[in-house]
Length: 239
Image 1 (cartoon, rainbow, N blue to C red):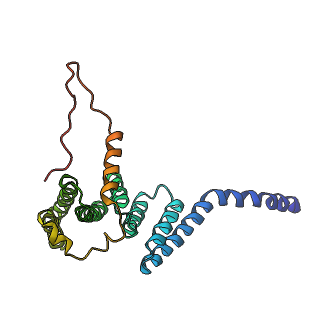
Image 2 (cartoon, rainbow, N blue to C red):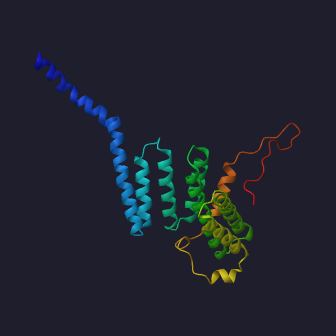
Image 3 (cartoon, helix red, strand yellow):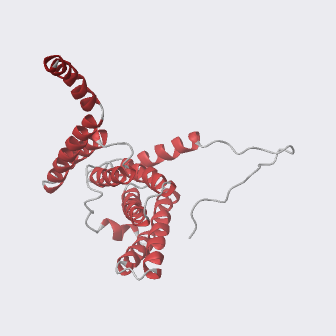
């Protein structure tokens, strides 16, 4: 009897191990591998291997559980920051815009949303810098300085209201975005290029392409029986 019971247990063991491997065990293994890729990403950042960091963050995200929304958002932010330094500023900026929308829709804490907004504002500021140097139309690059200014202003106002020590930094960034819009082009050309701008080519055209793509994806406003636009929404943002 004991031998039969032992035999049944022995036969059941591979099934139990398989269930563990493809169930919680697999999730644990994937999470462990994700931690390894995060460590690899940080190592690549320390070596200023930004492309390697972007790839490692991508691999970490593929292994992170889908229910870890906040952890995934922080990795996405780190990846976008690294992507800026690979010369993909407009692409990283688009990633951050999507990330900010996701964070604001979710139950995540305000600190994370502010961290994303700060990096997005910085990206918008540097995109405007590059677009000016590339000779983009004033309307195009001022759209970026306006967005940067609005985001830095939100950060500064929140910091002041809550006694945050970073209020001064946000205020300085706000003033810098205003100066960038007012600065003469010859003065801007005489300044050293920020590292966030180096390596980025055709920033104006990429931003233009993104803008046109968003226009195509935006649904048209419904019209009422008289043919006038219905349910009109105010323009996004505001100073």
